[in-house]
Length: 305
Image 1 (cartoon, one colour):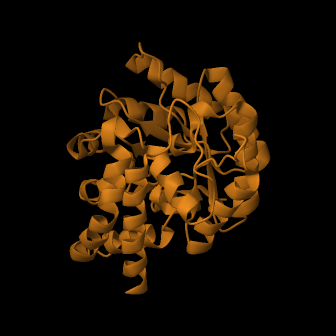
Image 2 (cartoon, rainbow, N blue to C red; image 1 turned 30 degrees about the horizontal axis):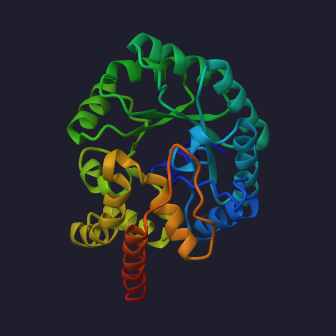
């Protein structure tokens, strides 16, 4: 795959699949393939196994590798596999090397959760991982407002395989500042807070957005993308309003339901079980009913065209 095609796909809907578990708590590979294949069949062109919505910090290294292999198998030529990697530098490099051997096209480096991170350490961490797999595209996952444009530009110069920045700081003005100060036109800027943030970040230079919602109704995510590309603000905001309650429920109480709302929706559709692993938990019955109500609204919107 050329770097141009990868960047073209990253400037779209970047879907993060859930990691389904069976009733015994084990990885359900068949359900995983079912969910991923359904997104690809709908037109999703980038899937990120082992993202945060995949319960990255609750699944084992062996399970992560299996999810990568299943994604590559399902994706074929129609979709790029963007693998989430993280942990210590050796752990992240090992995961990146596996992604390469499995046939993935790119890696997304999780922001280090270290409590004492410095800007220079952030640079070294990402540089070392990116340089270990020069054949793969690299996407940064930026959640820290301290990371500035000059640091991202320095990393782009040190790692020419840097393809995109998934910007997940809840401040579009900050994203505009960082991207403008970075001044590397080849980089794709992705709104990293899903559909809820997409219109605001689009206005300041994002050309793609991440999505957990795409697990559930990928057609609506793609319709939002089309409306943003067409500068059809009215259509974009109509779709945004449909998705908004779902994303607000995911974000409630410091995003404690980020995964469980998606899995609950899929469970109600019969696509996977609602089981999650600690330290997160399943929804209460009232919240399950809220999800059911939302799904009826989406069905009506899709039927209306």
